[in-house]
Image (cartoon, rainbow, N blue to C red):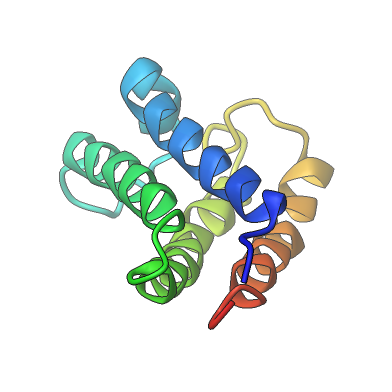
Length: 119
């Protein structure tokens, strides 16, 4: 079965998002919940996870593992989204309505990954 172009789009999106953790780490450090330990390491690991999982989408033998990894990663990232709603400083200057819209977007991204299981 031929791999659809939108799966490659998703893979590219995660690779680029992961690279941004290394190019602009301060942006990610600003939104890291203060109650989590070692924020620099967490930014590094989350960026690395996005890159590895995005690349994994391109390989049939590990695609399902990457999809499950992406879904779990997006669930963990909900911590950041809820933390950003906790106060003005945590919001990093992003309007509250955008922060609220990002939560259902996470679930949409989870579903987008889910539909490729056993593709």
